Length: 209
Image 1 (cartoon, helix red, strand yellow):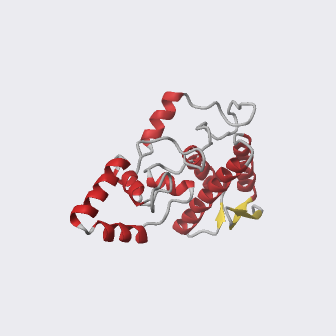
Image 2 (cartoon, one colour):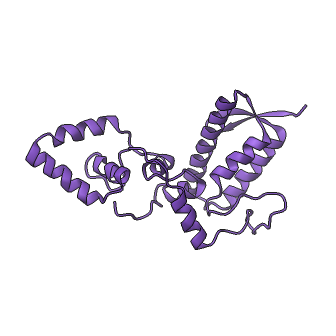
Image 3 (tube, helix red, strand yellow):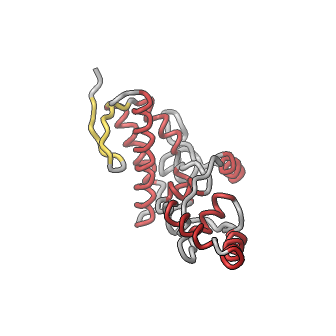
């Protein structure tokens, strides 16, 4: 019988088999080694742990289990990845000085970035918002230029008169994309470690929005 360890991940308590715990701990340490120290690095670590906790919770519910095995940890680590896009370290891999395999080249990163596009979720965008972030959120959701969306919103307000009501309704029903995971979902990106870093506070990429 394997020993079990009770650990806290992303503010949630989980029971892990001992070998699963050591694998997760090793992964998180390698992740920290690739993350710049400071508040931004701490934010990325917190976001990644929250994402891992979400994946653990979903998997346990789907499989009707209470204990996390090493196979589930390996599956979750594979989904989350590393902040620089490199493959998480495994036995037999060639490691860099800071742990993990060599980062992917720029072309591979670009291909994987585009391949992770999925269904977008509608959030209000806090990045450069003028009032409530509704137009920015719509632009991200529809993949339009935010200036065009704002122009349409202004025209509907001036010409139709119902624009304000629609705007207020969207403001009420749409949550603000506060976390990096939410900003990934807003842009239709899989919340991997690389994309979480991409959309963390202070590192959000410049877009047409």
